[in-house]
Image (tube, rainbow, N blue to C red; front, side, top):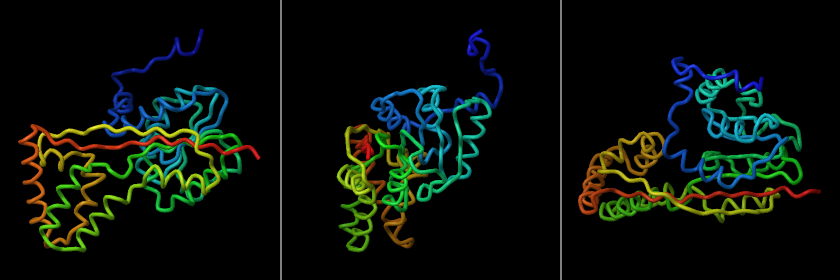
Length: 279
């Protein structure tokens, strides 16, 4: 009997229920972008950098199938532990999970056919070193595919924040806000870094999506904002000025929410694919 006809998951098992947990709205947007543009192949070896708690690692292993081997790498210990719990349930034979630094990958030269980096490129402290390592471990004619949010994300929020800081009159706060807004890369920057590492760009897809909230309170208390953005926004100003500035910020954002019946935040997205040419 074909093996999948005899296997099924017990949905009453709490570990199974936990494995099929919710993928965040944020991650899903970039996952769609990634899988809509990847070339699906057989008999290749894939490296998923910054695999976190298992997305898109497990989806890669299942989409590409058992003829392919997929290795997930991250330095987030807790995230990898969650990924291993999922692997205990899913029992996918073509997955390996490793804790390793992307700046010093524990692999031989020319080992992989495809490298994916979904929402990870902005989190590396030395992007050039990571891309150099990717080039080293990628086979000739292999590809690297990355997705990320780029400069311009949440531009509606930054506009209001900037106006408040201009009125506050502290130039250093404005400089800090600019640095916070621009620390995420652009299509041009990532393309240049890939080319400097030796890659040839062969596909670029730009798009955007909108995140909508009912109020400033809803925005600031969203789990995505609290884990990924709020700390950076708070670091723009000194502790002694934080309450005053953020109270003004909340007030101005709520004015917009009342006028338009919602707060809209734009998120520009990028899919960038590059190839390592044959020697």
